[in-house]
View 1: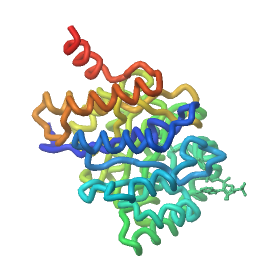
View 2: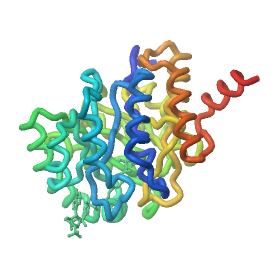
View 3: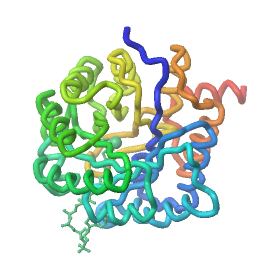
View 4: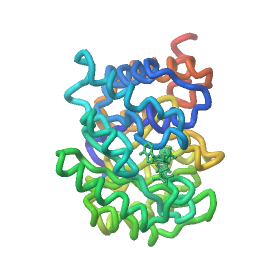
Length: 306
Ligand code: HMG
Ligand code: MG
């Protein structure tokens, strides 16, 4: 097996984890979550997204949150703070806060592209191109994420050739990294490997990440399938929070705690302190009044209390 020695965890809970919450989560709670993640050893995270507040009200405090991160020596130099920027409007709004990375997010499904960002796949590439160029000019990293790479809530199964097409287009316009997302968590290991292999025709494995939602309980298996291909970066959410408002019924991302537990057991380094992380996940779950969706966290917390 082609296992990597180290894996980069990108905790996306402040963004993907919270974007679908119906209750307004105060900016201070998001900030506390981010600081807690960093204290637990997370070195890369998605802080927020610069999208329309009419479409995703929960991310409407993007500027306030970034301002808080940037004030009073709160920002950690060793941490990569990523934000989602679907168009130039979003990029310009984000730029004043000097994010370390911007994420342009497309889709391998034409219908999901329309539902999520209100344009076709080809139109989305046209919108992303100036964002990627402006980010490069400003010295900001550009990551492309592709939704619905194995299945779509509207179109059903998605062919790997669609993943190849969108990867190629994103790389052509300057994406330095490609995230392969199973938005609705329908993927199984071989299908996910096929989606990853399609992307690998256009970008090296060290610039690919996996982003697996756990709707059908496959996300950890899919993570392992990606690890077996040598993929060494994963978007995960503490306590398994997450979901997309435009993919009804989809549940959270694979829990960061579960991925860290699995990788630690395999002798793969993540730099994350699992005990501290579990505390952060339980705290935000308690705040939201949600059951902690991390199996490893639930088991380890039960052991502690017994
Ligand atoms: P649009 O309606 O096509 O854009 O939205 P528009 O240019 O026609 O503008 C319409 C209105 O939005 C205008 O305001 C603009 O000013 C405003 P109005 O005149 O009506 O008051 N607007 C903006 N406001 C703030 N920030 C902006 C912005 N752009 C336009 N950047 C847009 C296009 C993409 C903005 C919209 O469709 C949108 O915000 N969609 C939300 C997308 C989203 O956040 N989805 C969830 C995140 S992606 C995800 O979860 C998947 C992922 O996790 C991977 C996976 O699991 O698959 C990444
Ligand atoms: Mg997602």
